[in-house]
Length: 300
Image (tube, rainbow, N blue to C red; front, side, top):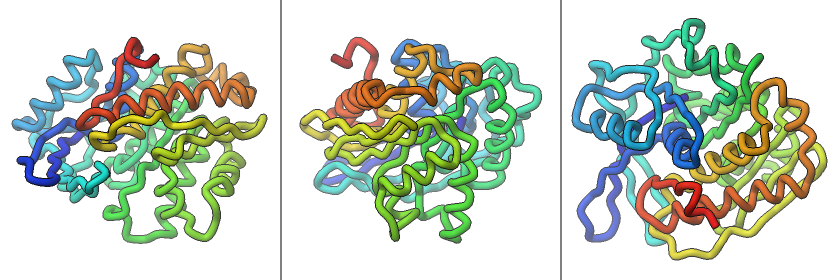
């Protein structure tokens, strides 16, 4: 559940290229490519960019809950630096007034609800997302990736409060090292992850790009190496990581509220296996342009 948009990426002498994106939508596509049935709650307009999003979701077997609306499709105009990292300027519409969490069969039937990024901070849609998470939590595993966009933040302390509210509702949290350093510059990434674990999640993971992922569960900490690849760009890497991480939890039968205590019982060895698999998925994504997550048979 969250934003769908079109990334228009520029870098070097090449003409700008348009790619379908949006962090929560990328996770939905990533999970579908890994063989899981997925429904997506998000919005886009009845326009050319919206048609790109619809076709992308359809071709990846992601079921759409909402139809296009009359507002423009959101865009993110990104500039790639020499190492393939993107900085963005957003033209964003985030209104989920067409979605009623209390009347959604997709939400009621879900075993796992993932959200994050702009969808959880930009009103009026953010309020609907919070309501959906609160409604789903009694029966579903909740996963969350803050994927912080500072351009949407006007009050740093309020941003921390908003993020921690979602962390406390979540079972699985993933954040980049840059997200955590921006939110809490006064303490280490690991200290923040431990503090978040105490708010309620079963697992908190921090990703360090080429430095590999690190995570913590009740049993302890684990870290794995990121595979060495030629980087095309880093767009969607964290989303591919999150999709693969969640996929391993589904495969292990650890999703759904009834499995919440089993999820809390993950061993350090199991955490390391999960991080390793997710890191390999992210490495495939950074080796090709745009948010292009792998299929199951691509992850060796």
